[in-house]
Each structure stands twice: as structure tokens, then as C-alpha cells.
Length: 293
Image 1 (spheres, rainbow, N blue to C red):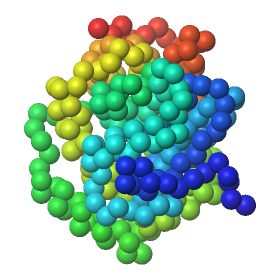
Image 2: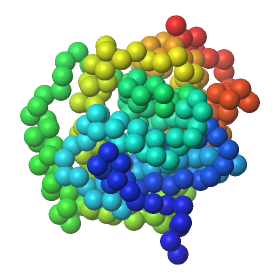
Image 3: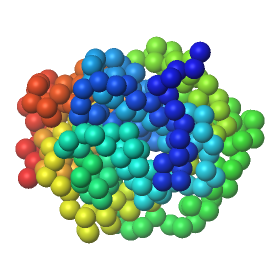
Image 4: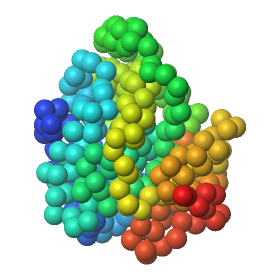
């Protein structure tokens, strides 16, 4: 049976799979990390009963065709802006973006480029990069060739296994407990695997483009919460996140018993952060690690 809440439409010229659950606003917009599907947010959605929630898969994921090129920050922001305008335009004061990992690039860039659309942001162990130089153009050439080869069956299987292995190392939960039948299909699908691979290779260029955008587009005065996974494998991660939180003028909360996939390990903390922007809750755990600027 087809789920009537799920749709495939074009936004800013790009085909995207999206789902809207009706409820009260402001709309919560869930922004995936690289190579991830909107099903990874299932527990967060369940813990927001009655709230209007929009989630989506970027082009190539969730049954849409892989565009055949590495995704750029500008086109990601354009598609996200079009999606928000067409599905959540009635929200007074803007939507609440909840962005994980690489999705934080898109959330921050959307707020800087289209401040009228954004009322608040929750960064869920968002990506932080401090680059000194633009990524080399040769990497893009090599990446495009590799992505094109993902359609070959042996590579297809290998990439699916690599994605599942990577996921297992980013959560305290067993992968079998967080993999739905549709997620299994996603990571066997040629287009989804190609897009996931393309997003990983596009990562540093998007990080660089965000750094350039910060020079010309100030961040609007919207509330931002930074959630940092306490169980990161990178020793310097809390300090890097703290510097980013100061840049965003945001409190930083260290989330215990969580690895990178915080929406799976600690979905209740993500929900509390969302509600804190409405003034209806406080983020549980320690006091903010960083008071912002």
C-alpha cells in the first residue's frame, strides 16, 4: 500500500522524495547527514506527536534518480528553500531546522541565504570543518569516475556493505535494530548508493563554500542549539564543536551515551532541544558547554 503522505516532486529543478506529517507548527524540518535516508529520524518523529514534521531525501536517495554529478552547496540550499516554501510557507516566524552531520552545512547556509524561512536550528552533532584552502579540483574528477562505477554489481554490494559498517560504528545500538525494510532497500539501490558516495566526495567542497558564504551573509538572530556527541572517536571534537557554537552564538550541549547518530542513540535529547526553542522544555543533561558569543 502506498503511503499517501510520501511524495516525489521537483524542487529547484531537482527531484526529491519527501514526507509531511500534519500537526501544529512551527514545522520541524529534518535534514539528513551525508548518505542517509529520512527513515533514520523515525524515533524523533515518534517523540514529536502532534507536531508538524517535514522530512525528505535529497536527489538520488529514496527512489529518485541520481543526478549524475557531485552535489554542490548552492543547489542543495536552493532545493531546500524551494521545499520549505512550497510545503511550510504558512509558518509564521519560519521553520525549525534539525540538521545532522553534513546536513548542518545546508541548514546554516539556508539561514544565511534565506533568513525569512528559518525560525530556529538544532544542530545534531553537525559537521565542523576549518579549512585553510579550497579542496583540489582533481579530487572531483576522480570522485565523479568512482561514483559512475557504483552501478556495477560488485561495487554496488561493496558500497552497501561499507555504508552499513560505517553506520554500525556511529551508534551504540545494533544496526539490525535500526534498519527498516525500506532502509535495506535504499542501501541496495544503485541510485541511492551513487548519491551517498557522491555526497561523501562533495563534503569538503561544500564545507569550503560554506566558509566563503559566512564572509558575505551574516547569520540571522535566530535561536540555535548545538548538540555534541560525547562518545565521539575524535578527541578534539568537543573543542571544535565549541568553536562552532561560538560562531553560531549558540549554547553547546554535550550529549552523554551518544555517538554520531544521535537521532538513534538519544532521540529524546533531540526532541527536547526542539521543544526548548519553543520555550516548552530544557535540554536535559549538563549545563551548556559553551555560552556562545
